[in-house]
Length: 171
View 1 (cartoon, rainbow, N blue to C red):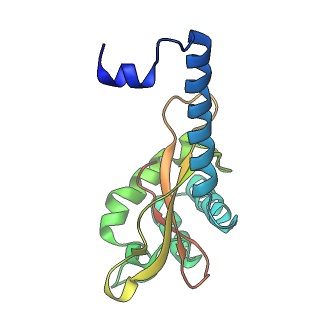
View 2 (cartoon, rainbow, N blue to C red; view 1 turned 180 degrees about the vertical axis):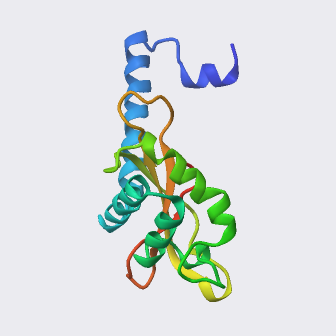
């Protein structure tokens, strides 16, 4: 018998008690993580819903990108410096393209299964740098579509301004 097993499972402990101990620990950890990581308000979810609505209703990717930028839903680091009315080339070719193509797998009114507060306290670089908190919202797929929820990052600026969709490439 290993030292860990001897320490954690004394001989006098019954199987029922062992099961109860394991189950209570699992529920306690899950509840603690979700309560501690919940975003400060519903504005982030509202912004995410609008972002999803644009992705699913726009005729093409260029129109969707221009609308997302015009409504100031995304972080400034994603915006093209030479043409501030659209997303930068890297976002358009990779993460936004993936989000636009796969948005049909999710409900326009996203179902968030959980939140995770990341350890990040600032995003951007140089003129786009901002302090605040970065949350991952795990968005479930539509009913009948297989797959894990997608982690979409929403940034809450320290100054209290509107939350921003920071990373959307996981759709």
